Length: 409
Image 1 (tube, one colour):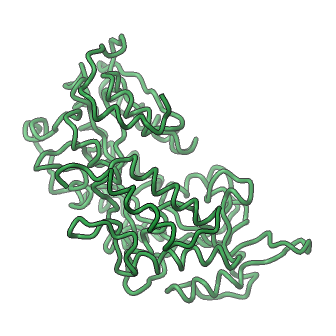
Image 2 (image 1 turned 135 degrees about the horizontal axis):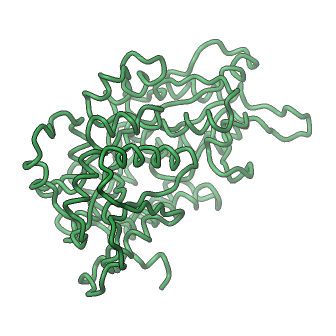
Image 3 (image 1 turned 90 degrees about the vertical axis):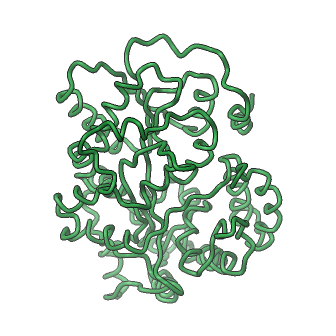
């Protein structure tokens, strides 16, 4: 079966196959960087010290995480706890495959749901039931290389789209004199989540409040035109063009002077490029201030044989102690307000930028299946790799995406 059709499994009845033979709880996450994986292992180790009687196995999933989780959920082989991305959570919650958590929450003294940032908790609530609990939040911010700014004679920071473009042009250089630029002001990525901050700043939406698709609306196309225009003008690059693995790697190597990222870039830079002197600021604004805030939850499948133990682990990981451990490095911001306050994130010279950005952040979540997002990825790649205009690409794909709207949304 081809990977792109794996989502069809969740349209089928849950198959009557047994979970893998295991006498211990299984917990899985995706693998985004060695730094993040190591930090998660440390957090799990802290849990083990607190609860030595609960035996578990950590099974990270490297590559194709959504497809693999979908396949395991569809075949009753899913781990007992796993990461659930807020962006596409509705496409999981709309099926009868996740364990509602309300009963566990109500039976747990001092759980305090009100301590979570509302948008983070609401991202995993479907038809009045809570199917996941957020482990963190992560607003997009702008990272900039202080040394490269100084070399270019720039002593200010970009506060709007025009300044972002102007400074990107000044920071784009042919440093080795071979006739080709090898330093760029900005770095782009052909993905919808990277464009959405600009769309929100321009008053647009992927999915409009009335439920209609907004990808061909003027506000969306104008934002995509601006974002793609930076690349088209040669003042932005892509990781693929530079032979590096991702935007953060390009930023650490000095290939780009500015990059949009969440907190996960900080431990990566610390581990791999400790000498880079960087600053962090809120995203330059368009017609209004806006950014995208990502949130990830822990969820458990209905098929789990370790529901009680899974809740014990989940309660620790999203509780004040576990969340404080996980977010201490700034890899993400706490989803609990009390943890952010107790750890001094609002006063921190860097983390405070993320907390400031959370005030005007919007969660990117739509009522479409992950298969629909694959169609969007194809459309975005057509813009950057085949020369299609943003309007042409979005118009071509609009009807196709509509087919993947979730029922009842």
